Amino acid sequence: MSGLLVTGTSSDAGKSLVVTGLCRVLARRGLSVAPYKAQNMSNHSMVCRDGSEIGRAQHLQAQAAGVEATSAMNPVLLKPGSDRRAHVVVRGRPAGELRAGEYATGRAHLAQAAFAAFEELAQTYDVVVCEGAGSPAEINLRAGDYVNLGLAQRFGLPTVLVGDIDRGGVLAALYGTWALVSDDDRPLLAAYLINKFRGDASVLQPGLEEITRRTGMPSLGVLPWLHDVWLDSEDSLSMGAWGDADDGVPDDARLSVAVVRLPRTSNGTDVDSLAAEPGVDVRVTVDADLAREADLLVLPGSRATTSDLAWLRRTGLADVVRDRAARGAPVLGICGGYQMLLDEIVDDGVEGDGTAGEGGAPTGSVAGLGLLPGRVVFFEDKVLARPTGRWRGHDVEGYEIHHGVVTPEGGEDFPGGHAVGPVIGTIWHGTLECDGFRRELLREVAATTGSRWAPQAGASPFAARREQMIDVLADAIETHVDVDAVLALAQEIR
Image (tube, rainbow, N blue to C red):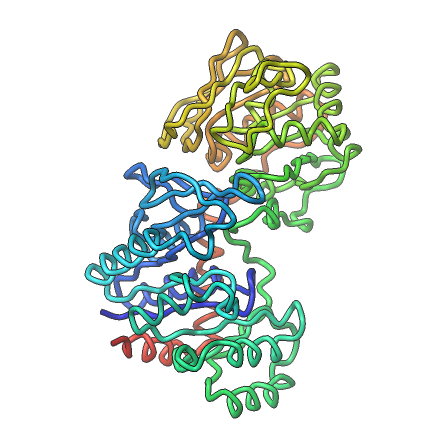
């Protein structure tokens, strides 16, 4: 079997990006490639065709590799429900919880599942490109590690270390990582790669040579900052990053969208397709004025609905949502955001952190915003599905990941939910990636608000935009990274 591990000097160093690009590059060379991340900690996930749940990044990497995504590609998914509790998904299915105190010592069974999944992929594909998590220099977690150097030790995986030069101190980060890992682990660090460089790469060369001299790790190349590449992220920091301010649409024909950044936002990638639409400006915000004045306000998914609803009330944003509804300004709630718009939420701690009981309501029952008639009840069993439908003559496809079951009590049918006037809710994620549906919805928002926005003739489908971005990334890796050296490393697996 053949494989390698891509890890980083820190979170968000570019591991997901590099793995995605390598999957496309190696697939172009005729190899069958599988992405793999032993453990992902993220509230941004996707439902595979077989009904299993994995991290969105691994789903996208499978697309880059040209293969069907499966639960083996992300066998362990931890979904934070609070600062001290994470919901565990193993091989795509719910598998209990993990408390903060158990993180370092209570994961042996998760490691077994992760290793078995890797072996499954290695027996099926020519190359398995693995993504680490965080940094291998987190030596406080090394004893129970199975996603960074613990994985590499188990399977003899050559490891490529990615450093983010944009945040500064990349040479110190590379050398510090190499110095901090144990003597047993250090030989696994086979090479390094610089990411997000701007300017003349020759200026960096003396530093790279010194890193190689001190560590023995050769440089595989220097990836430039790629302005036009935004890939599905593991967190909500890059929500709405697909926008293009120079799309040619005049200021008086634009549409503004405000997306509330909830403390426990989940599947924030739902709004990426809005940001990619010409003439649509997406702001992810907690600013009440932006939320009040936007043409469309979006309440995204949440991994802790009752807790995030309480936060919405504390910040005054709940009043902004109610005010918008009263004056006929459009509001769209997605999954958890939809649940907040209902009359009642019944959750005895199944999903969030058990903060029910506000305002004198019975334990486990919370009053919603009361803008959509109905209630939601949370159950232990999770719904994982890939539903389809039609709306205004357009096909709609989405995916469901939720414990809460909504019972509407009036209003107009909407795919995955219902609507009352300009207030719309859906339990389905991903529907906005359906081009006809998205543009018809935005056209109705524009008509409601008096905006001159209209869909731009010839605008690229969202799926094509995502494919183009993967290709741009792969082209950059072909140009700036020694891919032959990467292949040679992968073939060294014991």
